[in-house]
Length: 59
Image (tube, rainbow, N blue to C red; front, side):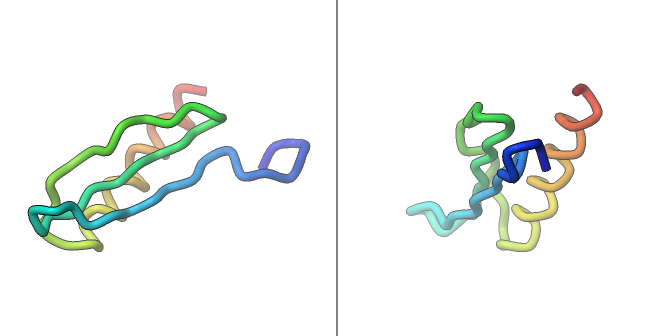
């Protein structure tokens, strides 16, 4: 968490109209467009966590 007590990243997982799952990642105030066509909610959550870890490493 940063100094103003807000999380640096938020993840929203949503079911698309075609029945597939996607995630939207907001990191340090920047919202990245929906990513993925995952078969399950768990797969979308896992991919979102991996994406967030990569962004954190990049700084």
